[in-house]
Length: 346
Image 1 (cartoon, helix red, strand yellow):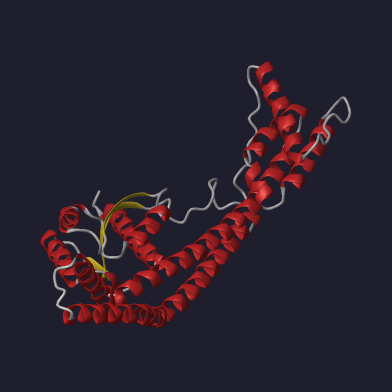
Image 2 (cartoon, rainbow, N blue to C red; image 1 turned 180 degrees about the vertical axis):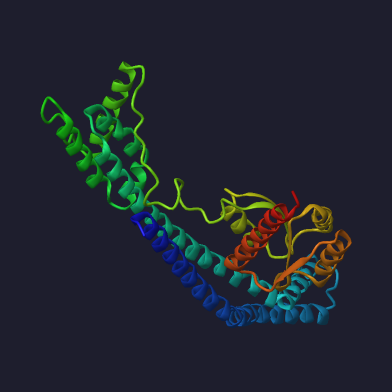
C-alpha cells in the first residue's frame, strides 16, 4: 500500500467521520425541534391573547355607547380579526420561526464540514506542491514552479502554509542557480511570490517552448476543491417546505448539474400546476410531508401516479436530510442507468 493509497483511505475515513458528526448534531437539532416549536407557540399566544382581549373590550364599550359606524371601530374590528387569525395559526408561525433558526444551524454544520474537507484537501495540495518544487532539476523550471504555487496562494494561506512553500521554492531556485543565491525574501511572502512569478513569466516570454510546471494529484482526492454535490445531475421536483429552505438547498447545489423545480407550501395553485407538469420528466420527485398541505400532497401523488413515477416522502424540514434524499435518489438513478447499459446484450 503506497502513500497515495494511504492518503485516499485516510481522507475517506475522515469524510465518513465528519458526515457522522453532522448527522448526530442534525439529529439532536431535530429532536429539540418540537419542544422549541411548543415554546415559541406559547410565547406568541402569551403576547397576542392580551392584545385581542383589550381590543374586544374596547369594541364592547363602543357597542354599549351605540357607536357602530366609526372609522376607529372598523379598524378595531379588522385588528381583532387579524389577531384571531394569528392566534389560530400560532403553531404554524412558531414552526416557521424555529425552522428558520434550524436551517441557519444546519448550514453552519455543513459549512464546518466543508471547511474541514477543504482543509484536508489543502494539506494534500501543500504536499503535492512541495513535491513538485523538489522534482525540478534546473533553474528555469524551479522558477516556473512559482506560477503554479501562486495559483493556490489563497489555499496555502488558509492553512498557514504559504511561508513554508515559498521558503522551499526560494531554496530550490538558489540550489539550481549557477550565479549563486538569487532568490530572497522581498517584503512579505505574497510579495516575494509575486516577484518570482513575474520573473517566471519573463522567462517564458523569452523561449519558444517554455516549461509549464504543475503539481501532480498525489496527496489530494482530486484536482478540484471538495464539493459533495458537484457530480450530481438530473431533474428534481419537490413539493412542500418553505422559501428559506428552498434558498438554502439551491445554494448548496449551485455547482451541480441539477434542474430543481420546487413548489413550496407558500406557492399558489398556478405554481403547483407548473410543478406538476414537470413530474413526467423528473428523475426524482420528493414530497415534504412535514411542511405541506394534504391537498398539495394528494395532487403531487396523483400526478406522479399518472406519470408512472415513484414519490419519495420526506418527514423533515431539515437542510441535511433533504440534501441526503436528493443525493441518494440521484445517485441511485445514475447507478440504475449505468447498470442498465452494462446489462444490455452485445
